Amino acid sequence: MKPTFEDQRETIYHVDPAHPENPALPTLRTEEMMLNMGPQHPSTHGVLKVVLALEGERIVKATPVLGFLHRGVEKLAEDGTYHQFIPHTDRLDYICAMYNNFAYCRAVEKLVGITVPPRAEYLRTIVAEVQRIIGHQFWLGTQALDIGAMTVFFYAFRDREILLDFFDELCGARLTTSWYRIGGVERDFTPELVDTLRRFVEYFPPKIDEYVTFLETNRIWLSRTKGVAVISAEDAISFGLSGPTLRGSGVDYDLRKFEPYGAYDQCEWSVPVGKNGDTYDRYWIRVEEMRQSLSMVRQLLEKLPDGPIMADVPSVTLPPKERVFNDLASMIQQFKLFSTGFEAPRGEIYCGTEAAKGELGFYIVSTGEGKPYRLKIRAPSFIHMGAFDHMARGYMIADVVTIFGTYDIVMGECDR
Amino acid sequence: MHPTAAQIQEVFPDAFQTAVEWRGDLAITVSRKRLHDVCRYVHDTPNLDFDYIVHVSSVDWPDDPERFEVVYEAYSVCHRHRIRVKTRVPEDDCVVDSMTDIWKGADFMEREVFDMMGIRFRNHPNLTRILMPDDYPEGYPLRKDFPLRGKGWRDTFTFIGEKS
Image (cartoon, rainbow over the protein chains, first blue to last red):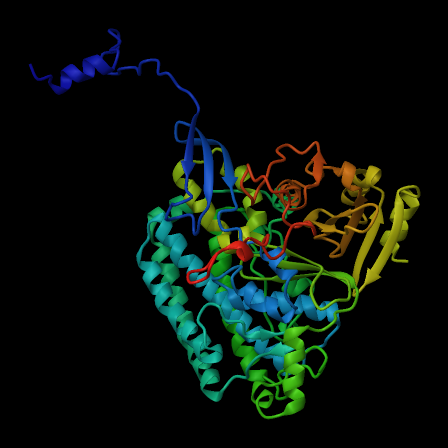
């Protein structure tokens, strides 16, 4: 006879005769379960595996398994000249290639001791902030998509496209830009590019409000970000977190303010700082940073000074491309710089830069040759993964996706 | 001498070796046996307060008697200054005390140094390879004796049309 619903209920639950309306659960056999998440998982933003030890759906321990995208970039750096490493930095955090170029060029300039002319500093800062907006748009879209809000993804990517086209006009590439050079930048803004940026600065603020409206009226978004992946300020500092991930915990740590570089001290802006250290605060900081970046771009475009876009240190900096084809001395200079490189002074430096994801630093040891003797990349995504176990414990499996997202993790930079 | 370096020299006269200030970066070298004490001191002393770990790195100098150099870089969020603490490690005994009890972030960074340079960290909670496969048999990639441009295999390939 086919069992009815009531029959099944009898077999599954032990009905207590005293309280027949309130069946108690049988004594379940429980054990810790290991679950592999990734490396091929759509929400891991690359190839990242996490081994989860689970108690039901609660995470007891989360062990990240890294290295699926390891390419040995630090070893590759020892084989090329300082100029030749710039395109490798594009492939670190491939969402924000411009900022990686910026961080690397700053480190080499510190090593060699070059001062960049003011116009180049302004151009660098403007493009770096545009890159930060792109990074945060990308983050916002994908984080919302992972958590279950699809519309913001389309809107953010629509607006990101405008800026990628701007990069395309500027340097010929949308993602792997390599526009920064040691001592300056490769190419100046044309008047059309300045117009594009001016129009974008007017166009974008209402769009940010639109994203915020979409998300803040979304109950799923709020309940999946508020109070999720909380980390205290002390722990965040001890783990070495940086960028919005650290500022969400209320630590006012921003290298653009603490150790100003570029033209960040030439404009008015503030550092948004969170309180609760949860995913929602980190989201709020990134949205505020987009507004601050827009304001910086607007101010710097107003004040953009005239002048050269490359420092004039012929032993280190590249000659303008158009002169390379027509002028013998420039051609020799270009040839020498790309075949043997320039000889950096003997010594070691560390130079940290506030990229979109956190502090991206380069530690360079030079023995006075044309190549770096040792180049260490301090990648924020890698260091954030070190805190993953601490932040994931006690949360549900579904929150793992949120925690990946809240770091704004990019595996190209994490695994190097 | 930089006041921070002078202070450390005063507290650890036997361990302190050199202090170099170049391009605004302060780097001090201390002996390996007292490295953990020095790091504990710079982390805990209120006027230094190096509470933020920036990176852990390593450099290979094959010609030196003490071959490896381990580098800890720390920053103070409230005083806004940074320091680089270095120590030298010989090849036949490349062990350093782990700093995971001082800075929690040192865990992954030290694992990376172990993975890339083969330096072991005493008292590290989980010292395994992190970027390379766990069973990688061919040594430590960032050592200078690890080949930079392949192992010459490509010279042994026979190409189509070539007589072998």
